[in-house]
Length: 257
Image (cartoon, rainbow, N blue to C red):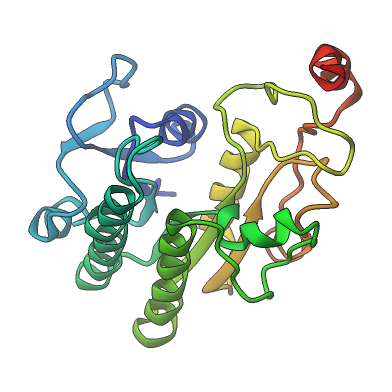
């Protein structure tokens, strides 16, 4: 069987780096970088350098692929003025997301997997409300609101243009095989690299489904987010647990400080 060709935008980021590692054995990869190409690119990987805010370039880079995993977003904005963060969200994140969906439509790319965020329902978490994908969005930031736009746009392209669109509300992702901090059972916020990769390839391979919003989190987050639909519709079964006892022992000092 011919291997699917998967385009990963934002392939130099923490999420993109993990997916390159974990998906390479399953798929042929085309990797989109904004400027810097990492040193760990495999010889068989296709490389493109461009900006998702460039519509013509996105039409070109998406040609001939079967799946787009859209991760790219504006660069590090932590600590920047609120107005600058909003401007970059509008000019890069939201515009780039439109370009990706439209390029998929033009080039008849069947599937788009959109990297959303748990911040789409971040207010629920602040209020101690357990979120599930069918609840109304409650963004806790311009960033979260921009991702909610990407989800709504994806639903439009699924319903009107026939794309298969899956939105993954990714929780804390550090790219490591350990959570990096202490989490009480049920209150973890961690998504491990192999669980992320599993979510992505299950979205790609699941048949008879053209739309879905799924919380991207490993086990141990039951009090925060409901992942029942990912289990039922995709067969997703997380392998890692951010609140596992060995991790709690590892970070016990942090919990006591």
